[in-house]
Image (tube, rainbow, N blue to C red; front, top):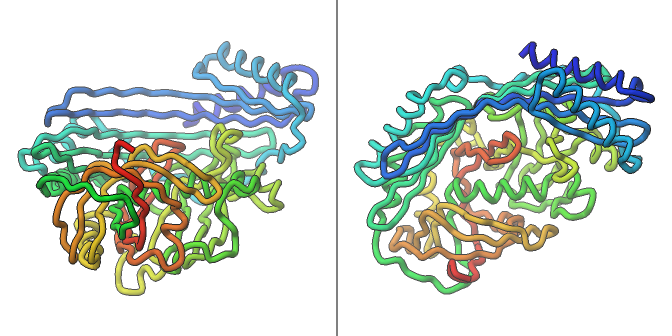
Amino acid sequence: MSADLDIAASVLGMARAAGPGAATADAEVVVRREELALTRFANSHIHQNVADIAITVRLRLHLDGRTASGSTTRTDADGLRQLVERTVAAARLSPPDPGWPGLAPSAALAATGTADESVVAATPEDRAAKVASFVDGAGGLTTAGHCRTRYTTMTFANSAGQSAQSTGTEAVLDGIARYQGTDGVARASGTGLSAVDGALLGARAAAKARVTGEPVELPPGRYQVVLEPTAAHDVLRCLSIYGFGGRAVNERRSFARVGEAQLDPSVSIVDDATAPGAVGLTVDADGTPKRPVELVRAGVTMAVAHDRRTAAEAGTSSTGHAVLDGDYWGPMPVNLRLSRADAGADGSTPSEVDGPAADSDIGELVAAVDRGVLVTDHWYTRVLDPRTLVMTGLTRNGVWLIENGRLVAPVRNMRFTQSYPEALGPGAVLGIGRHGTALTSNYEDASLVVPALRLASWNFTGGASG
C-alpha cells in the first residue's frame, strides 16, 4: 500500500502548488483500491466468472471559504494533475461553505481492519468450490446465485498531517434452490471464505423450497411475524440509512431521539467496525478513526452517527461515520449489530454468527406463535415517511402461514406498509434469536449482523400486485 501513500502525497503536493491561496487550503485525499471477483451460477452450473481491479482517487479542497471535490481513476501524473486542476477550478466557482468543519487531526487507528488471506488470494476455483458445495447441499434441486470476494484498501491523507490506511475483505455466498415452482433462499457473508458454508446454505435453501403446497392468499391486516435474518436485515439496514445518521437527525428527518426509550427493552444495537471479524474499513472518509458507538441500549436511543460536518452542527464530536459522497447521504453507521439486551446472560455466545444454531433460533420463535407469518426476505422497500420511517415493500423468497407453532402452508407474496421503529417499539418485540447472521449491503462496505426476530404486529396491506 506504499504506492497509494505515494499517490496521496503527490496529489497533496500538486494541490498546494495549484495557484493563489492553494498553499494554505485544506486538502484531503482518499485512494481506494478494490479487487472484486464474482462467480455466478444458474441451473446448478457456473456460467460466469468476472474480476475487476479499480483504483479511485478523490480530492476534496476547501479553498478561500469554498469547498469542492473531484475524483479520477487515472493514477498517472497527467491524470492526477488534471484531477487537481478540475477540483481547484470547481472550488473557485462553488458557493461559500460556512459550515466547513476543518480537517481531521492526526490520530491513530484503533485497528487497521481485517484482511483475510483466503479472500486476498481467492481464485475462480476457490469460489467454484463454494458454489459446488451449495449445489450439492441442495440435494438435487435446481439452484442459482453467486459467490463474491472483495479485497479493499483505503489510504487517507490530508494537509493537517493525518495519514491512515485500512484494509478489508469480504466473502459472500447468496443462492436459491427451486422445487416445484417454489424458491428457497440462503445467504451469508464474512471476512473470509470459511465464513460461508456452501453445504449448510444449500441445505437451508432446499429445506425452504421443499415446504410445498398450494399457496394461500391472506387478507390484508396486522399479523404476528417471525422475520428471518434475511428479512430482519432490511429493517436494520433502513434504520441505518434513514434513522441513525447525524444529518437526518440534525434536519429533523429522523425518528431517532437521543435519550428516549424508542425501541423494545430487549433490543440493543451497536456499531463497531473495529470488532474482530467485522467486514469493512476502520477509517472514515473524513480520515477520522472509527470507534464503537452504542446506538441503542435496552431500547433507549443512546447516540447517532456523525461525520465532522454534522458533529460540528450538533455541537459534538465525529463518531467516524463519514461516507464518500456524504454531501448527499450524510453519515451512516455501516457495521451494525442488533442483539438481545441480555445477550450472554443465559450462556449464549453473542459472538457466534450464523451456523445451524441460527436455524434452531427460527424454529424456536416459530414454535411460540399461535397464528402468524414467517417471512424470509424483503424486496424493493421504499420510504413513505422518513420521520416515522414508514416503509413499503414486498415479501420474497418464501412466506409461510404459522398456526399453533407449525408451518402449515405457503403464502402468496404480500405488500406491507409498516413503520420499522414501531415494529421494534416497546412491547412489540416478542423474541430475538441468540445467534446473528452477518449479511453485507451494497453500500459503503456495510455489513450488518442481525438475528431472527419475532414481532407482535406487522401491517400487510395487500397482495404483491397492490
